[in-house]
Length: 383
Ligand code: GDP
Ligand code: MN
Image (cartoon, rainbow, N blue to C red; front, side):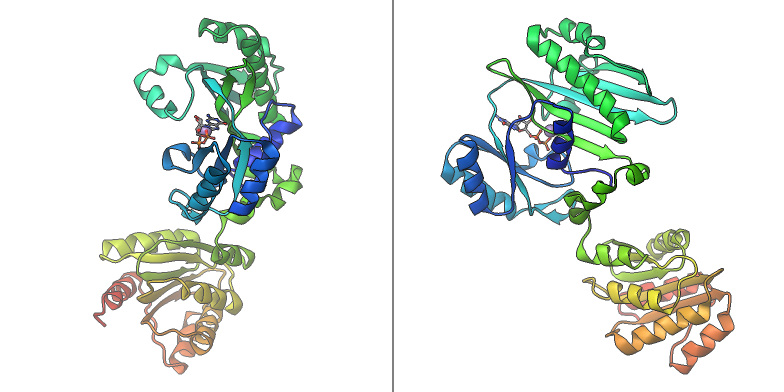
């Protein structure tokens, strides 16, 4: 959970009768062309990725002809979203709007004061960060206590001061009030529309949706477990690790790092860097892990590209180190571990663990720092 896709955010908005353009989710240029025929030109081709600022990175493009739809779809589907580091696999094809004015509305829940902090500006669009820095006075602020009824007219006088009139002002005020209600009813931690547009025909349209759902409320919204954003959030290796109860992050360095306990893992990553090395990945098997988990973690670790050495840092509290040793030995037998392996074991059943490793022809350190130093050296080819 966390950030959801624009198309999922817009589905939530539809439930509250917010004004939206028609749109169709597709996964190929062929489907994009069909969608454009159904919607009518022009359309906007929008990458569905778990990051913002797509417009500035060429991941949102207006298409006025069928050829442009196909070209933009091929182009965007060949891209990797550098912010989330995931390939673009889904596009939202949306009816193009004739924009006269862009409005920004954003709200977050402040769990300290139990209020929804509402921000908006009648000068929205892709340059909102610059506006916030250069002319913060162009952004209006409200704080709404959690659970308080809120109506559109709360915001209308401020919108009027900013030059909005008539229907545009009324609809915009009502949209902001609906978003405040959604924060509570839908358990959102962030709800943002940028831009909310006033069209040349004086219609108001929600063009973008950036929503973060509160992870702790998932039991009230079981359907969110099936969201496409949940599948796109993880690589195959991350999904496999999560299913096995492991924490796994690829960090792009050289040393495969397995720890027992996340805190120890973070300390290990810091120390690797102190000694001049770089962690390739962070794999934590958690307290109480047995042979199976250790084997699985090493299996996932060794599939990452760039592995130069492996460091296993195990402190046995509830975890039994003889079981950790069994996992390491079974990985050595079953996997292709063709890089230097450095092991540190300290704690519960340490003696038994070290004896098992020795029988299998493996050595272990007791102290952490010499082990880390050895793993860094080995990664640099100095073993
Ligand atoms: P973001 O950059 O990830 O926030 O993506 P948005 O959905 O906000 O799109 C970026 C920008 O593309 C918007 O601020 C608009 O200026 C523009 N845009 C999006 N949809 C349309 C549309 O239907 N018509 C036109 N003319 N521009 C659009
Ligand atoms: Mn936007």
